[in-house]
Amino acid sequence: MSDPAKPVRIAILGPGTVGSEVVRLLSEQGPDLAARVGAPLELAGVYVRDTSKDRGPHLPATVLTSDASALVAGADVVVELMGGIEPARTLILEAIAGGASVVTANKALLAAHGPELYEAADAANVDLYFEAAVAGAIPLVRPVRESLAGDHITRILGIVNGTTNYILDEMTRRGLSYDVALKQAQELGYAEADPTADVEGHDAAAKAAILASLAFHQRVALEDVYCEGISAITAEDVIAARETDQVIKLLAIAERTPEGVAVRVHPALVPSDHPLAGVHGAFNAVFIEAESAGGLMFYGQGAGGTPTASAVLGDLVSVARHRANGGKGPRESHYAVHDVLPIEAALTRYCVRMAVEDRPGVLSAVAEVFAQHGVGIEIVRQVPGQTHAGLILSTYAAPERDLRATVEGLRRSDAVAAVKSVLRIEGE
Ligand SMILES: NC(=O)C1=CN([C@@H]2O[C@H](COP(=O)(O)OP(=O)(O)OC[C@H]3O[C@@H](n4cnc5c(N)ncnc54)[C@H](O)[C@@H]3O)[C@@H](O)[C@H]2O)C=CC1
Ligand SMILES: N[C@@H](CC=O)C(=O)O
Ligand code: NA
Image (cartoon, rainbow, N blue to C red; front, side, top):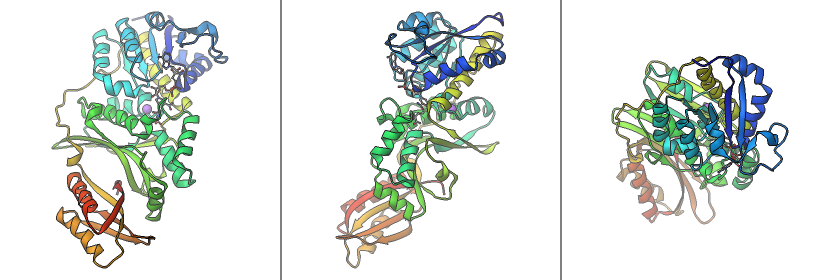
């Protein structure tokens, strides 16, 4: 066991939106953190590309370095907040090989190279913590990895991307355009450096892969996650949803059934009175169903510098405690061997919005396409149009493959001028 009074030396890589808040909180809360850890936390240095740039009072030139490898080599804990795959991956591996524990918020890296990093951390007997990587400030990784380790998680459903929730919420409640809402999300520090990761669902898919791996005790790769983003969602979709008392949310869903595990990310219509419909701005919310615990709900700020820094500091305190007092966090658990199911096997509901010919017999021609594929129609709504009539049909639950075949059939039907949008319905 180390001397409790010996400082724990912290290296920060990447003082951006999250990293600069971590540095500020480390400096402002030093005495509290030291008391909680049982040893002072000492900032060994902050890795930046350009040491000459003025970065404010918490980042004086004396703590900055452009030599990441030297910084990492002298640290007890390395906090990686650069994002991206490289050089983050190499520096984390260097840190681990040098005997440092690692805290990271980098879901893209964990989803792509998690097993390599977990194995390296295991071999070196150091900690690898990543609470901030999933749903920002919300404690979710720790509850799934530790608190629920004695239970069997069967389903996770939630909003895990703040940027897309902010965009959809601003479009719904304030009528903002997609582009303006995205720009605001970037200015508020919610979006990834390349916001394509947010709007195309890749960020949520990475989080879903991490959560599913932890929940189901098996490695779920990014490629195993079906992924659709929100870039095709139009103002018309948002209005159509509102008119039917629904809202559009980007959801992550991970399920374990007797057939296997299935993980998907896509936009979905959620009833306005569902708790997920009340998740606004960059907030996230995640429901977990477990065999013994039953239903659990987690809610809080899913993005933003300060909230995310809270999760990073929580991890930092945990790994620093191990440094100061001995002990080690959980290792990767991946003993299970469930099949990973394709999206085609998922049971879901569709809402299909289309323009149809305005003539008698159209409704029965459309209904016939659904019947041909064994898909039941629950609700039909007709809306007036200029050259064509608008038709919105919601189905009963059916296998995704049958729903897709139905939409293909509708596209080929003479009665249908255009399939304008297809959204899944969840949360009922
Ligand atoms: N912003 C947020 O709300 C959240 C972010 N995260 C994750 O936290 C990490 C950091 O995110 P942000 O702070 O938002 O990003 P950011 O882009 O604001 O900050 C990244 C910092 O790292 C630096 N950096 C990037 N590549 C570098 C390189 N090769 N060499 C030296 N410096 C480099 C950048 O110059 C910048 O200062 C990412 O992995 C992100 O996915 C996780 C949860 C929430
Ligand atoms: N870009 C991410 C940041 C947090 O993980 C998001 O918007 O959720
Ligand atoms: Na979290």
